Image (cartoon, rainbow, N blue to C red; front, side, top):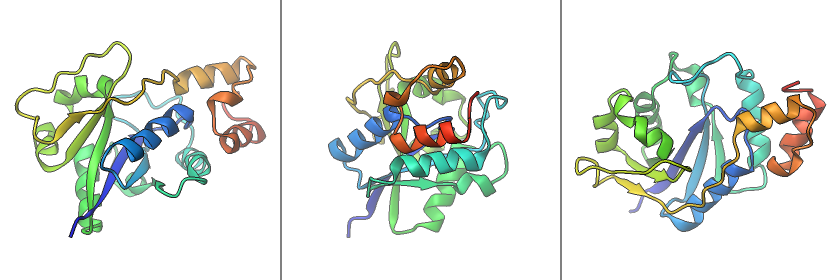
Length: 194
């Protein structure tokens, strides 16, 4: 019997925006995936932590963002894992806890370029499928070692960044078109990113 195919879309989602939803929706409709899980990360070891909103605030915004989508779910599995959390450990834990599911990592070409620096990257590419989506200005090379499990997906390039949204809100700009309505309302009512 075919296992349910779940894409893991990992990020700080600080905040989650329509670019994330467009990408996840594309992955659901144009690849083999049955669900996409937004995995909210406590702290990426390759990123600065100081501008990060609290874990539960980002988790709540992400839940609000996917509320109308049956096949988009949210995971906080890394909140209880040792920090910093590494993708190989997260996927291994997900696999152990969900034997009926098969997990695929979704990463941008900007992260694929850094992939050789990831912890246990060889094992990761061997044990899990990886779908790489394009990012502006990043060419993707998938070497012979990874071709079996790694595939480039021709997803639309949506250049909206959470940094742009945070800075715009700080500057008093109305960026409601960039965010799911519930997320925008949540940010305003909680005076986030001011």
